[in-house]
Amino acid sequence: MITQVNRKVLKITKHKIVTWCFIIGFVTLFNPYNIEAQIEKSSHHISISDYTEIEGQIIRYGDITSASKVVARLQVLNRRRGNQAVVAAVPQLIYRLEEILEAGSMESEGEGEFMLSLINLLANIGDRRAKGVLLKCLNTGSSVALGLSKMDRGIVREIAGFLNSDDSQKRHGAAYTLKKMHSLNPGLFSSSDISFVRDRLVSRLNESLKMPYLYALGIFGDSSTLPLLDQIANQDTVMVRNKRVNRNVAAQSAQKIRER
Image 1 (cartoon, rainbow, N blue to C red):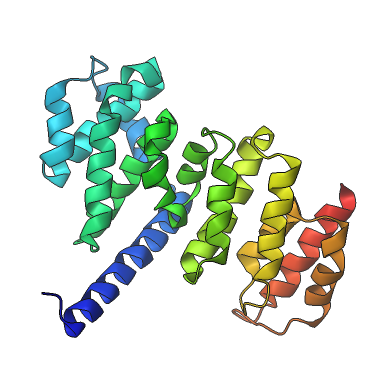
Image 2: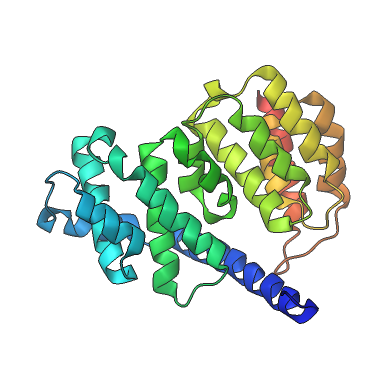
């Protein structure tokens, strides 16, 4: 029986994993010693033999150290021999990633990096079966955008739905993901999709920190959004580290729209 206290603890724990995902994803994205770099550096020592069922069981049930080694090998195998060489591992990768997300907590940075390596491999494979779990990871960086950019057209509106979430990290993750997806696969976005995304971005510009939405409006905005962007660029008062962040980004996005 879940008591009120237990519900509160569970809510706090789930918030912690979201925060961990965001922090580790950001650091990994800009860290020169990130997962991709480490794998590439050591890839000449890694076997590119066929994926095996035993490896699948290690991914699914093994300790993090063992499972991480398997995932690292599959990343190299995918890079060398293509998606068909590793696509059989997709169900096991999804299972383990879902398990981490459902646990609601991470013991260490190593576990966070392992989670990101699972996301990275699923994103590179681009199998449609991974869509659901990748949608749960919108706040983890550009790998998710890569994976979702390989899905069918309906994915754009699914992600845009998160722009109205009550969770600010989900909103910001969705805005970043859509912006990145457009740069990776602009053909995925129909004109009606772009209007749909733009309307939802504009509807949440009453938030105090608007940066992710303002960046996205540089891609999805049009002449109708210019007055709003100009107003923010001239009047917004939010300061972060002595910089008028909303003003600066709004001005940049307005300039992009005018240049199109």
